[in-house]
Image 1 (cartoon, rainbow, N blue to C red):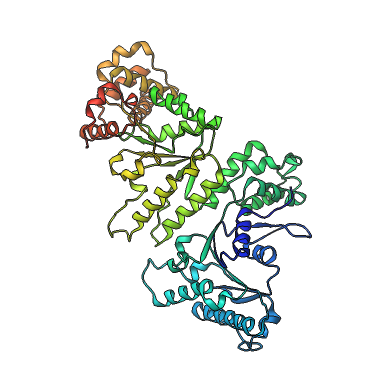
Image 2 (tube, rainbow, N blue to C red):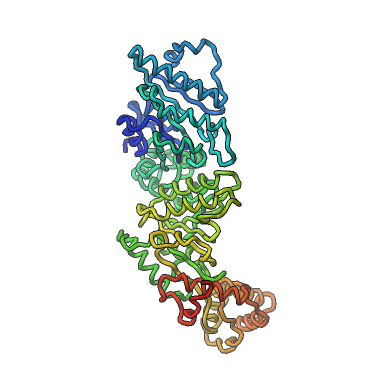
Length: 554
């Protein structure tokens, strides 16, 4: 497969050549390696090299700036040296404001030369790590930062510069880290650099295959297979993986690809997400027959590609310990698609939380079909109006999540699953159809027999066999409103008693139940059951015994 321009690069070229824009904010996967499709063969380089060699070969002067290196003349040093203001052996400025003013003066000089002498000079300016030069101001207002932001805005809107063939590129990983005067400039185009597609990964594999004969020995004629399996990882991570495998003389094997992808993506995301291991299926869920039937019907539609009736998301709600996370783990094995769990994306640094969300969303779009799990959603999803206690972070999180969850383009690609024992604390707008279409309540047991069967099922996982016909011996001891979490704790206690006191399973269960106390206070349990009943999108999910509790918590 020959290397071709990625979609974002074609979009950028179209915007520039049509004169729609001359300033571009490149965000997203900007720190990755990129496949450069050159006339004399492709190669892997960083984004700066991609811009200079692939996007800007016809430009006369290319200047770059970053905090570490200051201003650098990447191309056209002879042309640049003709600028009267510039003197031989003059040190170029490095401080942010001085540098931006210096660059602006040069751009104006080139624009005046063109206007007066009709000499055409194409100039490009690349500001690397732009968020460090003109950062977001949520940490506090700064006149100096605002002045620099206005200078950069002028590159796209100044009338004089409009007559110059120029392009400016601001490179930033997360838009939320950049000064709002720059991000919200209507004359600037925000171009997202996505994670590499399966086709781009295949082209990269073809390029590096000769250098990694052992690592890719099992895929010599089918490089598209590992490329498809590793979609969602960066080219940098994949290249590093191949180098490590080649050094160890280990071939990349199909059985390892799922684990490798998990490790690569989680490392690239700096621990913001984790993949849920799909070791279980819905067959491992005790009871909840109506819920399992509904979910299986949705998964069947998904597999068939019939997404018209596919929900955008589920809300799993119910008392603490009713198995919401466990249900997601079982759904992961049933669905056969990656299941991603949000971890600690909230950060104490101003703007970092929003930046983390940007990074997560970019990954989700690259994964293709996936399930996204957000536990304790009442705390994670933010509030429309959280006051001033968190400097507005909660409101911005809410806004970003609401926008992403309602994006119709995600239907059939991303299935959101929110879990909470306090669904009343989740913003109503986040639970509406179009974001969360199916609300599934999970409940504790309603009878002693259900409780016994639940304990039996969980004891089997401890390799403890409770005879079904001895239910009568423990019937009066089985607690009401038993959750899977509490039952699992009892199963472990039974196992312990058997091992430490040489009791048979039923004797161990009797001893474990004799002084048992429900870990959730009765009033809390009843309140949370009522909330779950009130949230249910279909009463078939609610046992008859609980339907009278619908008004609780209202």
